[in-house]
Length: 77
Image (tube, rainbow, N blue to C red; front, top):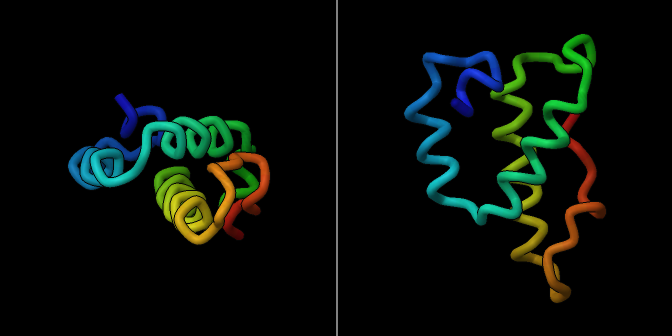
């Protein structure tokens, strides 16, 4: 289902692994942000944008001393 939302049916396995490695809150926030971005503003693909955003959000949550704040990290360019 996630692969379909991100227009990448062939990426199902990679997305499943990504979901297994990161907190649910990060995945949900990244998905909401990814789907809110118009396709014309995404350089490669929704799946690539989502993957980069998940990694950035999760990296930020681990490097910060405060609890996860989904509004603070910028979206990947």
